[in-house]
Length: 281
Image (tube, rainbow, N blue to C red; front, side, top):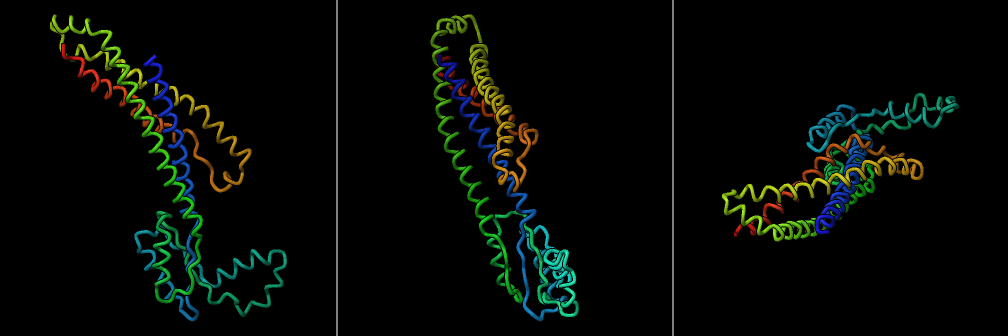
């Protein structure tokens, strides 16, 4: 019964670990996509020459937080505007042919290495000479940052509690097993058995408890993750439209490695520590 309870508790712990690992990996994936697609638009004062704007852009590119900064000239901005708003009625834009209404709209689109640095970069941009306006989405950056922190905190709290319960149950399982085999251990010691020979069966037992405790939830996650992604695509297209969830093949090797290390590590370490008390015969 102790063995079954130990396996069940380790399985619950590792299942939650896998679940939160998948959530955290997808949030990080979404943040990475946001970093690649959501930029900060920087507009400059009227009358600034193109050389001055390009010089400011070179300074922005030199910042460690900036991955890239793309320049859009006033003419490119006007051409883009015409293609979007005068599509099918291009003749309406002919009246502006010699008078670009976006003459002072040259800008840089700044993309960051880490979206959590957005506010710091925006403050630096707003303090630069010649910068008229900085346009950005603070909601998106704050959302990804806060969700990531919340998932990490919940993961640490829940997994920590379950780990403590798992350690307690495995320790009791090994203690009970050692108590039943006490007479056998005494005989082994009297005929010259080493500590390793006495410890080995208990270490194997702890290892097997951890191994089964890891394999069971990994099998469950393998089945449920694909079903969950399919359910999101069918019922929450708004979420999957923003970014495509990671495939199981992308995250399962890392998830399985962490789960096996966690399960087997708990089983072996707790068994080793617990059995030390039962070697004094």
